[in-house]
Amino acid sequence: DELPKTLTDMYTHFLLLQRRQTKAKYNTDQSTSETSGTETFSDKTNDETILSLGKLAFKGLKEKNLLFTEEELTSCGTDVTKAAVFSGLLTQIKRENHDLYKQNMFCFVHQSIQEFMAALHVCYSFTNKGENVFTESTSATSDLTASEFYKKAVDKAFEDEHGDWDMFLRFLVGLSLESNQDLLQDLMNKNEKHKDASKEAVEYIKKKIRENNNDPDKNLNLFYCLNELNDDTLVQEIKKYLNSEEKPFETFTASQWSALTFVMLNSDENLEVFDLKKYLKSEQVLLGMMPVVKVSNTTLLSWCELSEESCNGLTLSVLTKPSSNLTVLDLSHNDLMDAGVMRLADGLKHVNCKLETLKLAGCQVTEDGCISLAEAIKSNRLSSLKHLDLSYNHPGNKGMRALNAIVEDPNKKLETV
Image 1 (cartoon, rainbow, N blue to C red):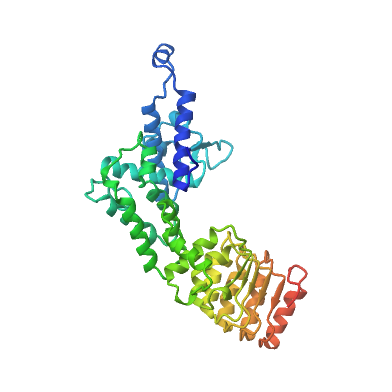
Image 2: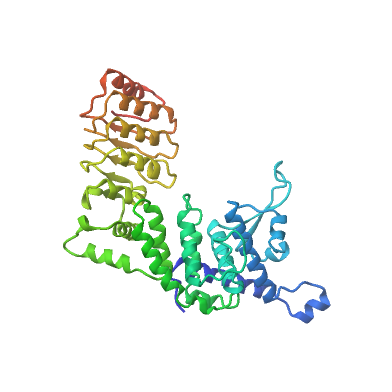
């Protein structure tokens, strides 16, 4: 009747489409199949296959595995012949010509499909069987309420430092909505346990956001979880601030900064240039808005009272990330010192670094810092750096020689220092 509004809603409709198409294409009349000897793909068989694929997907996420053998499919109760009809979910990779892979391998058509199917398995296990397979070491029957179940799931995903369960969590909380459970009623029981679970999950996620002051990426994913639960109260609060004449950024809490980051990343406005001074000259604010820096082409941070800590954050969260778009970084007139510049040099060494212009004027950099920059540029044969501004610093004779040697190196793209 209307277009899906959330990711979970869209993937749920996609799964139902696969189920419907399979039924239309492969289901045959029972009497015909008995006389002809052909195998019928009944609704029950198709649903059993979908649920077994969910079990396989969850097993793969736990083991950080994206490729599966035929034996692994069988161990999860998946019949390869029956799974083959769901080509929109699982695909076969033939590797007969590769010495290391004499057997056929299987994978989900996209990692997000695997994460959705894994969430479906966890939700089904809890709703239909009373089993908590995600947060407990065994799948023994649990007396957890639905609210407690989702809170434990949020905690476990949140505590994973690599974010391996972030997308899975978005799908899992999205499946708690009554609207999505209505869509999946042929696969899952509609349980009274879930009646208020989504509302309590919303409040618990907001509580986690308010308490987390150290990891902006974790908060960002929690905002995406709120989006899956159709709750945008924090986002609307920020939009109201942005539309008002006074923008009280000085009084913002950590959760409000996270909400602002979420709003900026999901707005239609061009994020090509990020200027911290438009918001608040603060190191903690910058560290919280690293996801915005990562998607911006140009980041302006001059005169923002930054230190080595900002350089460390930029290196870990932006310069070394393959998804970063940053090509121009202006850090002029901050007390970065040699220690901060050396952390930036670690980022410049990385193959993912896309910086073309780096401005470090007036950052109290001395000989050691300049030499570390020169060595970093020299060591990265893929370095894209063209312009390096170190004016109003103290490079000394050794620092100058090291930098000039890089400029004169015909194999380097560096044009001006």
